Image 1 (cartoon, helix red, strand yellow):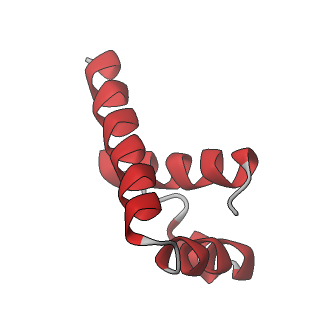
Image 2 (tube, rainbow, N blue to C red):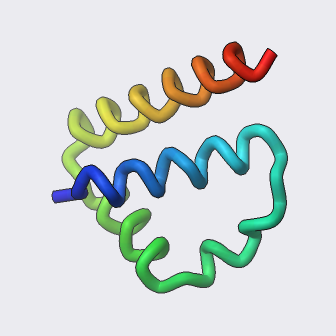
Length: 67
C-alpha cells in the first residue's frame, strides 16, 4: 500500500510535470520513484482510479491557486 509520504511525492511530481517545471526530469531515474509508479500500476482498478482522481483534483486546485 502506498504511504502518505509516497502519495505526497507522487502528487508533487505530477504537479511539477503538469505546470511544466523540468528541474526534476531525472526523478524517474530514481528507483524508489519507479517502484512507486509500478505499485500504482499494480493497484486494483478502483483504487488506482481513486488515487488518480485525487491527483487530478489536486493538480486542478494547484493551477487555480497559482492564478
